[in-house]
Image 1 (tube, rainbow, N blue to C red):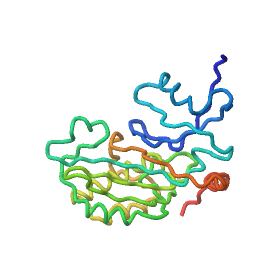
Image 2: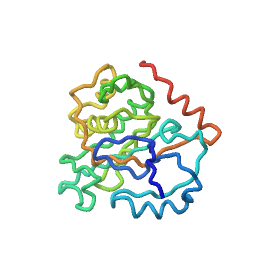
Image 3: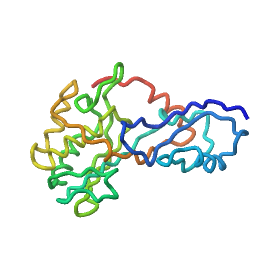
Image 4: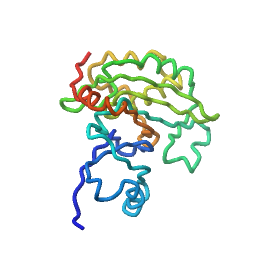
Length: 229
């Protein structure tokens, strides 16, 4: 059998060190080569132990894992226990040395929702817009010492989620007021006032897509260049 290089398109390119449990990818392959229901089992033998494909299925030709997406969902885990994070969660949870006020963090998060130019929170890339529609940003204390940020947007800029988390952690320990992060939206360039939160606490947990008959229209809409507000 001849080996053929296959191009892979993913829904979201995460920063180095960020995890993904809900990544979506597509590639164009002949369906008569390997039945989709057999690909999962075959890939297990080829992939490294920290990467798994959970399901494979045919999709319409109009489907694009990146441009057809309606929104991406991320979670950021923070442990503010005095003794630090539990050893078994040290690879996906940030250990924070001070107690955090979730009420203050959620008040600050609410002011960031909507479509804005998030230039202050993004590492700018040449020719790329920093205007994004932040659809959800809420902190939930799942356990006594565990906070989880649930974040969703149509798309994210490079380091945007980690920068938002970094700003909100400062609010959570009362070093900044709740309106401070939203005030940074007035900046047209990345600000040095925000510390980017470590990558390992962040996980891409899901990607939403429209119905099949709306895939092409969504991809065309996404490809259209955003105008800076």
